[in-house]
Length: 412
Image 1 (tube, rainbow, N blue to C red):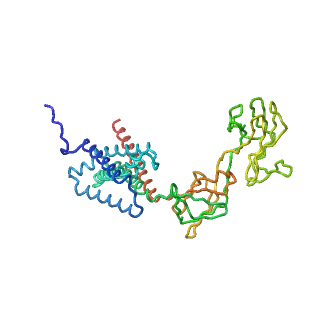
Image 2: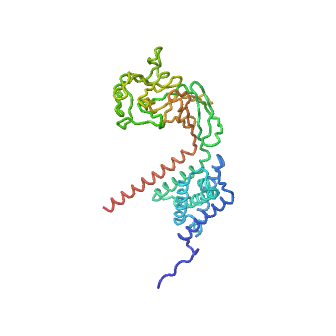
Image 3: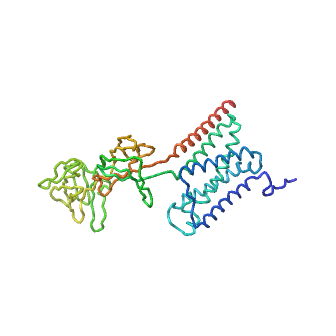
């Protein structure tokens, strides 16, 4: 005799009720989002976000301990609902990855929150229920404590902590652009993105020196008629140094002298100059169909015109090399008197007073003569919590593999 199929909403609830609940949560979220004209949720800043998170944790703990055997609570903290919510979050994350976030687009899609999915109502409601689901399973495995549950506790507690700190701490993340000129100090940063509000930093930054190291300049032909650069006959980028040779349609160019830093002398010929004031010069010998007397080429710079050579209908020019690295020598001075001298480079930030200071950019029009350095100051007080969660997940995974190795050893 075939068993009767279980009817909807007959205890114990399983996957189809969980899938329906997750779907209704998304539908409710999108309906609320649409009815509010696309206005999403703005996470409150500290301490309100911390209070809300603590209340969620306390409510989950109370619910898990006081109604542990209630069928509805067991379903709320069960695997079917957890997997259904994870699928919902994956769908929302997919939308967030495919639809440009923060951009403008289709009005209906904007009203549904698709262009700001991670601050939308469907995302917030799904995450809130997922926090409860994950928290309940964690409570039941933790109280009473058993060493055999340690791997589960580490993994799930780490996931809960990392997710909670990442979402609730997002409102406390500060990312500022700090422009500072050589010889000057500033304690003001501009909020990244639109608006550019000015924020006062708890410390000042004095820029002593900004320097750029460049790759060697390059020889190129320029066609004025088509307004484009033309590669040499070898189709390779030609870096300039003494002895460099370039060929183009029967014209041969050889660099006979190269000066990395020079300025025009009284006679017009370059003379050596310090790197802070000079520009590269190269003396070239042009033979073949476009033969002409030896001439100087230069990249040009502030107050110095570039030297070029006309060859038939093209122009032989020397363009500056692209930046290899750039750095700022700064002194960071806190309000309390603490100071730090540092050299900032790309991907080499400095920690100071709870902030990370990054080398971000410079005045690209001025190139290596830029006296402006663009720094980025980032403060994320919840980041240690995210790291703690990741390390707990790592510990849980390590324990999982260790237990697996032990079991395989016993069976062998």
